[in-house]
Image: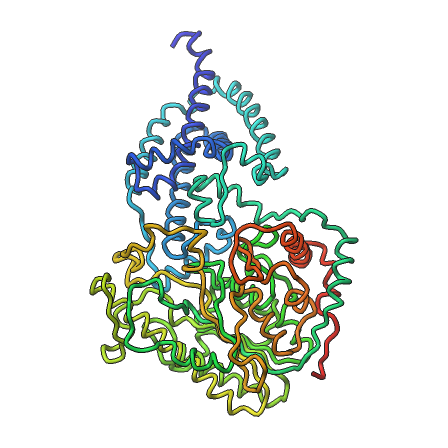
Length: 626
C-alpha cells in the first residue's frame, strides 16, 4: 500500500463507519415493523418507506450505540450484528405483546421481563412472526459486510480516536438535548416531524412505527409535573378535598375481580341457556352496568390499581405499570384507609405470586394478609387454572377465619379461570353449554362453547358468594366485575375466533370502542338499600368502588367522595376516554371537562410522583366508630 493510501485509509474507514451507522440505525428502527408485516415484502417495505420522517428521529439512539460499540470492540461488525439482533428481540416481544395483550410493547414493560419469563415457564408459548428468518439472515449479512472495515493497524488509531471522540461528543450532546429536555416527548415538535396521534395506543404505534413511538413513550417513565403544579395550588385543592368527608358505616367490603368476565355480543352465537342467570337475577337487588376498561386482552394489575386507589393507570401523570414503579408504603387508597380505621385487610389471587410485583405492591397498598394459588388445598380446577367457584369458596373461608377478632373486613379476590387459551380439556362434553351460529365454523363454535361454559361457572361463583353473605349477621357490600375483554382462542396456531369473523372489517377504534372495552359489574349488599335495581351506567374502573361506597354510605377516603361528587362536567375519565353525564364515551374534552381533568391529574401527579403535598388532606378524618 502506498504512503498516500495509508494516510487516507483512516478517513475512508470513518466514512464507511458513518454510512454503516446510518444504514444499521434505520434497519434497527425498521425491524419490529418489518416483522409485523411479515418480512421483506412489498407491503412492509412500503410501510417503512412512508414512515421515513418519523423513523429518522429514532435513529440517533442507534447511531450513538453503534459508535459506542465500535469504540469498544474496534470493528463495525459487532454493532452491525448486536444492535439489529437487539431490535429483533424487541420486535418479537412486541409481536407477542400484541398477540397476547392487544397492546404494543411499552417502555415500562421492560420492568416486567421477569414476569414474561415466568409466563413462558408456566406454559405460554413465544410466537415467532413471519419474516423473522429473513431479518436474521439480513443481520448476519450486514455483519459479514462490516468485517473488513475494522481497525487493523496502529497508525490508524490516532485518527480513529480523534474523529470518534468528536462524533461521540456531538451525538451525545444532541442525544442529551433531545431526551433530557423532553423534546422527543414534546407533542408540538413531534407533530412537526410527522408524528400522528390517536385515542388508541396500538394505532399510535402503527401510525408512527415501533421505535419512534417507543422512545416517545419514555416520557411515561419520567413524568413531568403538569402545568400549574405548585405547593400553593395543591393547598387550594387540598382545602377543596377536605370539604368532601368520607364518613359512613364500617361495613365489610368484598371485591371480586374476575378474569375476562365479558358478554359475548360480538360473536354470532345463540346460547340455549343464560350463562349470566344469577347476574341478571341479582341485578334486581343491586347496581349493575358496564365497566369501560382501558385494556383489552391484558393489564389485570392496572385495573386492580385503578379500583383500589381511584386513580387512572394510563395517563400522562401515572406510570403504565403502577405495581412495579408507582407505589410506596402507605400509598393512598381504600385498603390503607380502612386498615388505619381498624379493618382486617386480605388479598387473594388465584395464581402465582411471581407476577406484577404483587407481594410488594399489595403490602404497599395496605393488605395485611396475602394469599396466592399455593394457599389453596386441592381446589377445583378449570383446565390449568383454579376455578372461579373455588376462588369464591376460598374468599368465604378467609372471611370466616377473620370473624373471630370482631374487626370489619376487606377482602380483595382475583380469579384466573377465564384466562386463555381455552384448551379442550377444560370441561367434559356433558358440562358444555350448547349454542348455534350462522357463521362460525364448527371448531370456533366448540371454542365458544368452552368459553361460555366458563362464564356459567363464573355466574355460579357469584351465586356462591351472595348465598353465603345472605346468611351473615354483619353488613356486607360486594363488588364483582370483569377486568377486561379478551381474545378467545384454543391455541396460538388456530387463532382468535373474532378474527375469523367479519367483525374487524369495518371496526373503528373510536366508534366501536365500547364493543371491545366493556365488561359487566354488579354492586350487591346483604342489607336493604334504595339502590336495588339501579345502575351507575358506564363506569371507569377507577370510579367503580368509589361510586359503590359513596352510594351505599360506606366509610371511604375524602378524596373518593370528591371524585364521586365534586366534579360536575363529566362522570368518569381515564387516559383515552371520558364518560359524559349523558352516559356516552367521548375522546375529546370541553373546556370545563379539561379544567376538571387537569385538577384530577394534579392530584394524581402529586400523590404518585410529586412532593405529596396532599397526603394529609386525601383521607379527611376517620370515622372509625362507623
